[in-house]
Image 1 (cartoon, rainbow, N blue to C red):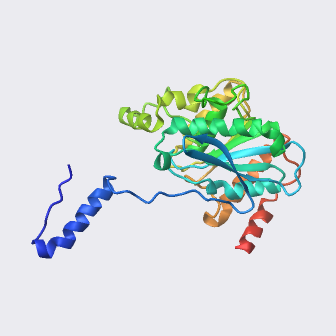
Image 2 (image 1 turned 135 degrees about the vertical axis):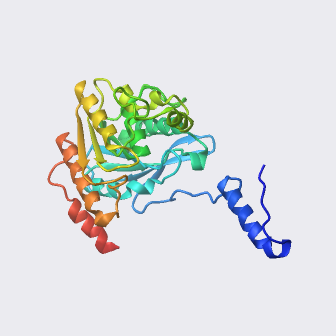
Image 3 (image 1 turned 180 degrees about the vertical axis):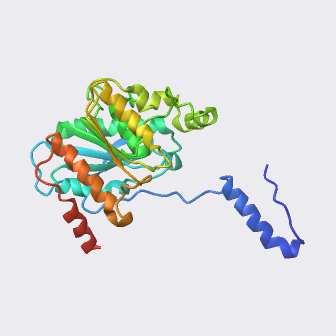
Length: 323
């Protein structure tokens, strides 16, 4: 029940009462908020449905190289937003750059709470579906099915990490003989520790765990990449700001250390003084956008997926001229 207090007389306080009631209704979520929509089209990208759930169609925005090689390497990015919000536009420029370097680069839609009423389990299921769809359609896309990377930032980084680390959470009705596990991962400030770990008694108290479970839709440990690390998982690059107040830097550090301990190829690129979302295009004169894409480029070159020197500085300068 909502009670709206009535300061002043009816005549003098009528507008004040209206405003107070309106604010309370908005704060409690009882007034319908405008539903944000994703872009119908990103310029220069193909927009293809990769998954349908009920009345919901999820799209892949595909950026192809100007001169695409046969069986090109591919990457799919998942946007951040706490599993609740966000847009595939977040990784548009990363896709454009990697396409200019010869990759088939994609930014994927996936179900989120504010638009679809879903929890993190659905986000992870959609991430796995996206990787499986790319592999199943590798021939049509001109993609090497053995060179597919999953990437993302924040919650999207978690989704990408789960495709390579977490078992289960697969969608029904898909051909599970086709693997949903990527061949590499590029994770930007990903939450990889979602349950208590030994030696960190200051992390995730009972209230935090309860809140996380409500957002996860499953036991947090079951969707916590750190807890699911095992030998044989994809080569991984984690890029993380050391001053991130949202996803603590130490969580990235212990994730990389544990993965390396069991023999996986895992690297941590640390950025002193940088906070959450530091890598986004358009932030702080694109200094960290350039730095993180140089590091990403080097990672793919190390895997043998890219050749030549990074061209991110020229790419970014060209975008600035166009704008």
